[in-house]
Length: 80
Image (cartoon, rainbow, N blue to C red; front, side, top):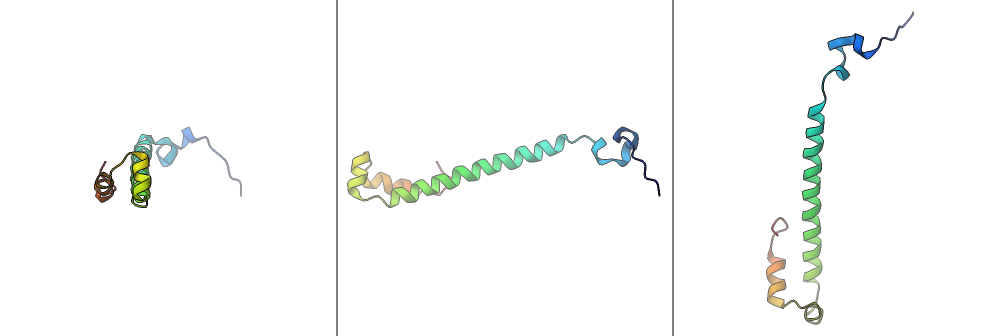
Protein backbone atom coordinates (compact mmCIF):
# COMPACT_ATOMS: atom_id res chain seq x y z
CA UNK A 1 0.00 0.00 0.00
CA UNK A 2 1.47 3.31 -1.06
CA UNK A 3 0.69 6.40 1.01
CA UNK A 4 1.29 9.76 -0.55
CA UNK A 5 1.63 12.90 1.47
CA UNK A 6 0.03 16.03 0.13
CA UNK A 7 0.78 19.57 1.29
CA UNK A 8 -1.79 21.20 3.57
CA UNK A 9 -2.85 23.76 0.97
CA UNK A 10 -3.99 20.95 -1.36
CA UNK A 11 -6.32 19.45 1.27
CA UNK A 12 -8.55 22.51 1.27
CA UNK A 13 -11.63 22.41 3.54
CA UNK A 14 -10.92 18.89 4.77
CA UNK A 15 -7.96 20.08 6.84
CA UNK A 16 -8.49 21.78 10.19
CA UNK A 17 -5.27 23.74 9.89
CA UNK A 18 -6.62 25.50 6.79
CA UNK A 19 -9.25 27.28 8.92
CA UNK A 20 -8.41 30.52 10.73
CA UNK A 21 -7.54 30.09 14.38
CA UNK A 22 -8.04 33.62 15.67
CA UNK A 23 -10.71 32.38 18.10
CA UNK A 24 -8.06 30.30 19.93
CA UNK A 25 -6.27 33.53 20.78
CA UNK A 26 -9.46 34.92 22.30
CA UNK A 27 -9.92 31.82 24.45
CA UNK A 28 -6.31 32.02 25.59
CA UNK A 29 -6.69 35.71 26.42
CA UNK A 30 -9.90 34.98 28.32
CA UNK A 31 -8.24 32.17 30.29
CA UNK A 32 -5.12 34.20 31.08
CA UNK A 33 -7.12 37.17 32.32
CA UNK A 34 -9.13 34.92 34.62
CA UNK A 35 -5.98 33.25 35.90
CA UNK A 36 -4.52 36.68 36.70
CA UNK A 37 -7.65 37.69 38.60
CA UNK A 38 -7.63 34.45 40.59
CA UNK A 39 -3.96 35.06 41.41
CA UNK A 40 -4.77 38.55 42.70
CA UNK A 41 -7.60 37.14 44.82
CA UNK A 42 -5.33 34.46 46.25
CA UNK A 43 -2.68 37.05 47.14
CA UNK A 44 -5.24 39.30 48.86
CA UNK A 45 -6.53 36.37 50.88
CA UNK A 46 -2.99 35.41 51.88
CA UNK A 47 -2.11 38.96 52.94
CA UNK A 48 -5.30 39.37 54.97
CA UNK A 49 -4.63 36.08 56.72
CA UNK A 50 -1.09 37.24 57.54
CA UNK A 51 -2.49 40.54 58.83
CA UNK A 52 -4.89 38.63 61.08
CA UNK A 53 -1.95 36.76 62.61
CA UNK A 54 -0.13 39.93 63.69
CA UNK A 55 -0.30 40.95 67.34
CA UNK A 56 -0.80 44.51 68.59
CA UNK A 57 2.94 45.11 68.94
CA UNK A 58 3.63 44.24 65.30
CA UNK A 59 0.62 46.23 64.07
CA UNK A 60 1.91 49.25 65.97
CA UNK A 61 5.36 48.68 64.47
CA UNK A 62 3.96 48.95 60.90
CA UNK A 63 1.63 51.81 61.84
CA UNK A 64 -1.75 50.08 61.57
CA UNK A 65 -4.43 50.33 64.24
CA UNK A 66 -6.26 47.18 65.35
CA UNK A 67 -9.59 48.60 64.09
CA UNK A 68 -8.12 49.27 60.63
CA UNK A 69 -6.68 45.76 60.52
CA UNK A 70 -10.02 44.26 61.58
CA UNK A 71 -11.80 46.23 58.85
CA UNK A 72 -9.31 45.00 56.23
CA UNK A 73 -9.48 41.40 57.47
CA UNK A 74 -13.30 41.42 57.29
CA UNK A 75 -13.30 42.23 53.56
CA UNK A 76 -13.98 39.39 51.14
CA UNK A 77 -11.06 38.34 48.93
CA UNK A 78 -12.55 39.88 45.79
CA UNK A 79 -12.83 43.38 47.29
CA UNK A 80 -9.91 45.83 47.27
